[in-house]
Picture 1 (cartoon, helix red, strand yellow):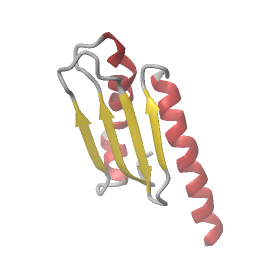
Picture 2 (cartoon, rainbow, N blue to C red):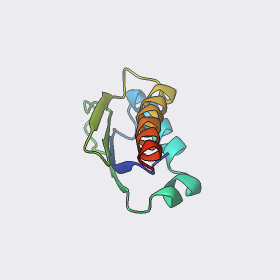
Picture 3 (cartoon, rainbow, N blue to C red):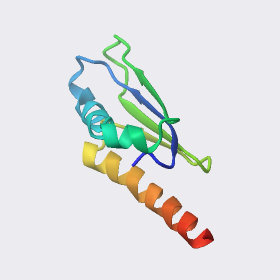
Length: 98
């Protein structure tokens, strides 16, 4: 899942009610298999104490594509799907190049 990802930034207030999707997204991507697929992927998790901080997810792919999401408006499955969908596109392009 992280093979084509250069960086993942996740920001959420740890005790905020709206932080659920961001926390579950992290839980889904921080597996041993995912981390082993790209040890160079930078993970940046920020947990400010300001309750008004909007939970967000930013994903920067190897080709420079930068996706930013407001995690209060998306389910964790939608965040994971957005990342895997674009990763599949990059995998197909790599496969077609030979």
